[in-house]
Image (cartoon, rainbow, N blue to C red; front, side, top):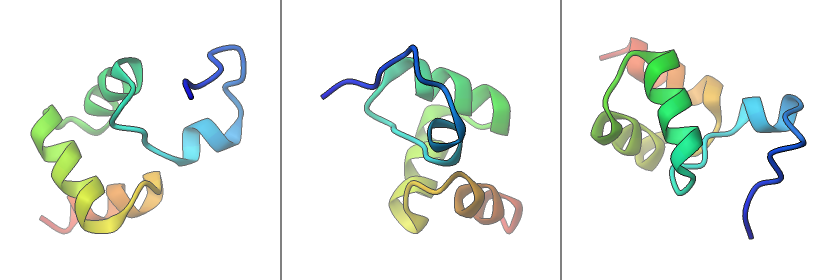
Length: 59
């Protein structure tokens, strides 16, 4: 099921879905990483944006 683009509340900003192109574009720009780095971080720590941020800062 695709994300509802009309709903962009806290839940959408707190999780990263690497299967949605618009989210990949948003998060790679917001975090200053490329797609591969984003996907590795999500694979390592899960979809929580806070966990991904912390993981990327630790590298």
